[in-house]
Image (cartoon, rainbow, N blue to C red; front, top):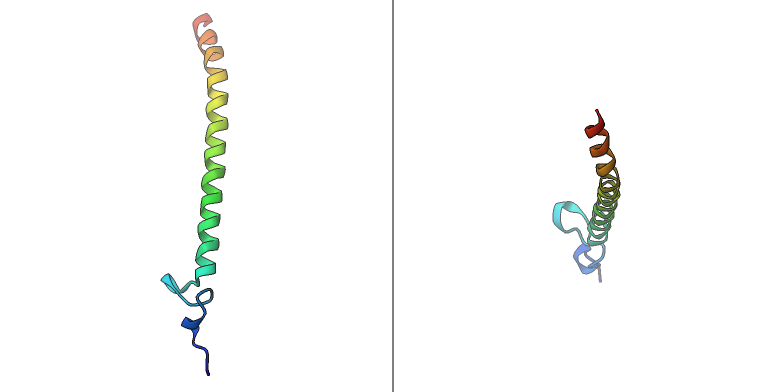
Length: 62
């Protein structure tokens, strides 16, 4: 019996010609990038909270 591509759910082409495994990998990469951007935004926010009072003090002296 000949196997058709649709018989294998992991390697069967799905949306945009990607297999389910390829699509899942792209989704994982996207989520990982979003988490990295969120972590960077959180770091920048923490830095801004530390610097804001110092910058306000400098502004008052000038």
